[in-house]
Length: 93
Image (cartoon, rainbow, N blue to C red; front, side, top):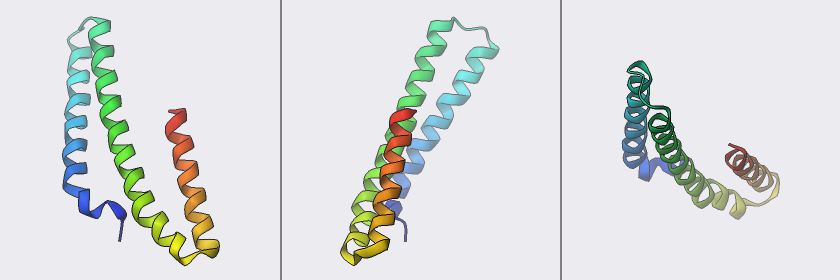
């Protein structure tokens, strides 16, 4: 079971909101909206997706990594490595 199962509806709501923001940005570009206004909306959509990513990471650490840590051994090492790589990807983006 995925760690985010208890927050699934909240995550889906956030993703739908971000999807709506992206569609709004498309419309703005189609309508030749002022660049700075478009960039403002891109920033808001990016922040919304970052919040989803952080919530997923928090759930992963609290569920998957914690559970693997209890087991120890190679499984725990792999989950910690996965989490570390995910954090690195988030920081780079």
